[in-house]
Amino acid sequence: MPLTTRIESAIAEAIRAGQGGVAPPRLASALHYATAPGGARIRPTICMSVAMACGDDRPHLSDAAATAIELIHCASLVHDDMPCFDDADVRRGKPSVHRAYSEPLALLAGDSLIVMGFEVLARAARNDPARGIELILTLGKRTGMPFGICAGQGWESEDKVDLSAYHQAKTGALFIAATQMGAIAAGQEAEPWFELGARIGEAFQVADDLRDALYDEATLGKPAGQDDLHGRPNAVAQLGVDGAIRRLKDILGGAIASIPSCPGEAQLAQLVRAYAERLTPVAPARQSH
Amino acid sequence: MPLTTRIESAIAEAIRAGQGGVAPPRLASALHYATAPGGARIRPTICMSVAMACGDDRPHLSDAAATAIELIHCASLVHDDMPCFDDADVRRGKPSVHRAYSEPLALLAGDSLIVMGFEVLARAARNDPARGIELILTLGKRTGMPFGICAGQGWESEDKVDLSAYHQAKTGALFIAATQMGAIAAGQEAEPWFELGARIGEAFQVADDLRDALYDEATLGKPAGQDDLHGRPNAVAQLGVDGAIRRLKDILGGAIASIPSCPGEAQLAQLVRAYAERLTPVAPARQSH
Image (tube, rainbow over the protein chains, first blue to last red):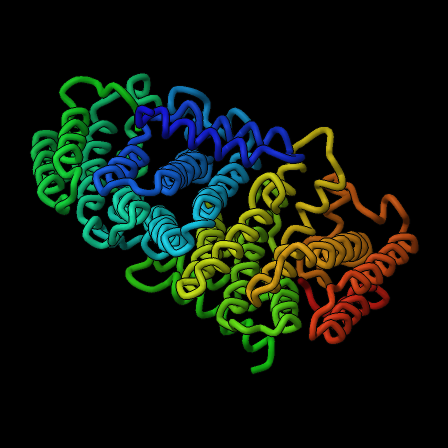
């Protein structure tokens, strides 16, 4: 089964499980709306690619890991778009969840997707409880406080920001979860995979800063110029466009160099190189993430 | 250690773990604010009481189960108080989290507390991964979609409401989680403990309807008359005050009768009887829950 098919069916299966029984229909529909059609599914692709590079001896666990990360990512998009944060009307080229449904349903959809991320892992792990617990710990750490995407967003409410903690939590966290959970799902240690995730996260942060500064809303599929508008720190303001592009290339080189020795090391390096090309903004990017 | 001390230290320990490292200080503070001082800690008390009635052979697991349920409960209060839901200024006699901090921080505090609930269980379960996975599955089921408190809130966005599904998800879910997770933490089957949780949940729903109809804001520690204001279905509108009080007593009698045979059966029945007295509104209730 091609990787994208595997990812899409695992996500769809998780959403269906959340809609069974006598679920409130509009919230059930909002869960589907928030997760499909997705963006480029970059985090789950990285997660599964790492699992495959490590042998992927429990495909149902790597499916669950990839799905859980994407559900948490979708939850964060739904909550970040809400009026008290970015107040974004558009996401992935269609109305944001609170626009299409309502604020209460957007809040609940985000909450439900977070819970679903942990449920997907626990359901898949009944026969592998030890790996399951490690997957859940890693997902929790990179989602909540003090190191996860919640912490990352939390920094935006501070006057004095620890920039390195901010970036690693806000953008890096789910990439770190992706590489580490891919490894754990395949029975490997998580720690050696930290650096690859962190560097890919940094690269995406710089690429996102570049896209936010260079592209318009139609190309982005979401409002442009948000960093400037909200006075958020970003690489383009700090280094200029050319400097930011150079920095992006350096980071991705470091990412490839950091890949731990494993059977699928070469394919994994190729995947990162492909992202590097796609991320570097010479022409409008082909897909949102 | 008395039960209340055990519960409070387990909750405080979980919150401290979320504040370590370089956490954004205001969000870290909001997590503490949202969880302490608590209300009557009824759900964790029930959870631990069931665990103790079943022998409590892994106290660190029942501590974690009780804490996780209370963290989820606190998260739901924080999100439910937000402007897009109840728009409540006051909770447990002090400003609600979005009033004391901000809407973004309230949203993030709720998200972080949900994540923390799952993390607490996973951390405690490293040496008991099989029980840990069952605890996480039960917490997830009673928190998210389609059977959890998110689903319960979701019903309030529907024109046609399945009343039984609504009440069981909105109020019953975390009581079901409490009895079942207490049993799982002590190595017992969850299923026989469903009915006790569901009936206690029903009793609290009726009691809450009575309190909302009869008491003022100063007594409740939160705005009164909310059910009427939001047109929510409630037992007092349906049965009148006397009818609702009779219904409450019936439900609690059924709850006691449903307690599965276990070493601590008698103490558990006594605990439910004590709640029954406290819940029945003859004089203003002594504590919020």
